[in-house]
Image (cartoon, rainbow, N blue to C red):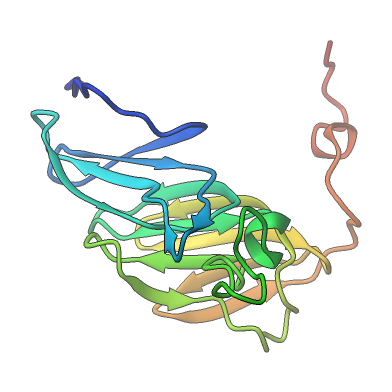
Length: 176
């Protein structure tokens, strides 16, 4: 395993993911909109730890997952969907994370947004995200489906769960 040393990284509540060329994505979960601009909360470093680019993934990031091609899946919790820290106010833009799930390209531009009119309902808070290959799966509030996104098409399954709690997720396992 190769180690990437990053000096001077200042993103709070950071999530890190590997990139296909040996680099790393570091994303801060929070991002303020103030004075007419968004704070940068994403940084891509090469394998030597040199900063290649910075960008904005939005506020309220719940999870980040990267793919073998370098795409970046980002899920959002409710503040990222509905707004906070200046996003979604009368004099500011709608939250970037308003769809609840977005796929960014490696240049940090948006490639795909979860459709608001999905037959599985809109995302208010994405509880779980996992990327395998180029596809992503998510589990979210309000209707708690499990959805799989591949080739920009959404497939999914309804569940009878109404939330996620440790006891349900690990029933039959002993926990401390």
